[in-house]
Image 1 (cartoon, rainbow, N blue to C red):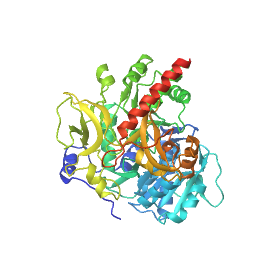
Image 2 (cartoon, rainbow, N blue to C red):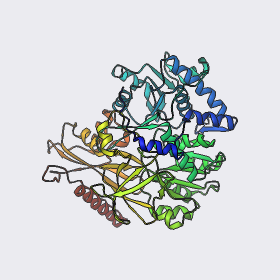
Image 3 (cartoon, rainbow, N blue to C red):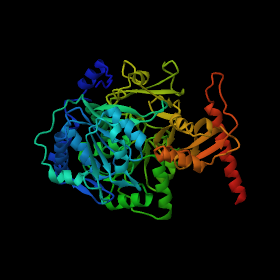
Image 4 (cartoon, rainbow, N blue to C red):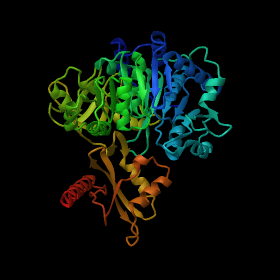
Amino acid sequence: MSLGIKLNERNKQEYYRKGYWGEATLADYWQKAVLCVPDKVAVVDQQGTSYTYSELDQAASRIASFLKEKGVIPGDFISFQLPNWAEFFVIYIAGLKAGAVVNPILPGYRADEVSYILNKCESKVLFIPAEFRGFEYVPMVKSLSSQIPSLKEVVVVEKGVKAAEGINTFDAVIKNCSPLAVNCTRSADDLAAVLFTSGTEGSAKGVMLTHNNIIASEKAFTSCLHLTQNDVMLMPAPVTHATGFHHGVTAAFLVGAKCVLQDIFKPDFSLELIEREKCTWSMGATPFVYDILRSLQKKKRDISSLRFFLCGGAPVPRHMVKEALEVGIKVMGVYGSTESVPHTMPCMDDSLEKIVCTDGKPVPGVEIKVVDELRQLVAPGVQGEEASRGPNVFVGYLKEPELTNWVLDDEGWYYSGDLCTMDNEGYIRITGRKKDVIIRGGENISSIEIENILLQHPNIREAGVVAMPDPRLGERICAYVVLQNHEREITLEEVKTFFASKNVAKCKTPERMEIVDKLPRTASGKICKYVLRQDIRSKLERDLKNQCHAV
């Protein structure tokens, strides 16, 4: 199958010449860690499942042997829709050993989204939980079996919940398969992973990353933060998301560190894990820090081991950084995207001003520029679109050459669609974005996708979806709708039930709805989203004032 990989040959040779890229694959780096620290704990999850590097290597070898038996050959895709469980780590490494392209899928995705991704990847094997957060995955996958011709095997991770008889389980595969004798050979320039991200186009896009892309990204990341095998990292963000996949799992084994996984974020338990496991750093979206700070106000904890907490996925409120410093947590913002994994961050020895007021500067090997609408450079301090180029930048959207060419030019520059300013020292500050995307708790959600679902409701004629400010999640989803029949009003609860019936991830469901007679539009018929954003801000301010007066 034609994947649509786009790579500038001149840049490729330069990355090799400068040492950002090399011949070693992620599987090679894993084997190095196993040889260096075989008896060290590689991962422990919230349920207490734990593997040393040697134990995990043995388990992954058995899963890799199973994959080979089922016809997975180098370059084939395997998908896994798992929470932050230790088994995720095992399956990831098994995929590397088998030479497969690994495809993590968010646990919150439902039938339509899962079917789309599996068909896009032509995945041969899928790993799912038996149950997570009250949702049973096996019935969903069974309902999709006829729609995914490439899918040959489904393996269930039971995790204390028994699957039906006749279904492959993770534990049974480990028990019944012999370890893979020899890892399958791959090139560092081959695809290693495809992570899906939603954007303004409405459907998820498969971000293609080579072994060299991921290795370069995490080498720079761990180097800038001075991470070593002595570090213990807490990952509360989903490991199926770029943040967790790269920095929770991959970065950990590149340096031989210990990874502590939390599958359901609860701030009290996060603090308990930090205290118990002596975690030295963590990372997540701003709501994680918000909740942790609120929890610390209620009960003090010994979190002296924690050197820093990184925030990515959305701009970090400056007041939050200051508030965290007051209770001993050093919060630092990092900036990037699934296409160009965090490529700016403050240095560990940066001044307080740089940490509080910027999103950092480029990591080694990465170039940043700020451009206008014509993609021409703007002066320092002038707002423009952020673009990056470097050994970490993706090599295209899976089977989407037109979308790839729109954001990735022939010289290797990735145009993010995000707005920023850059100072004379190269530090940037994200100021907004051009994309019509809602960033809810660090998750990018396409407003167009939500609008298209709303328009399927029999009593909705027009729909405009925008972000509304939220102190915890950063943004929530607000839907403006025009009804077909104004005499039959619909409620927000009715809309939520409708979305649930469409097998859509819960995080994409509107959280506020405004019924209007008409939507503001431009002369060309486009919805004036800025008018809706101004309107919801005004309404929220009014609601807040009314609450204050009521008190």
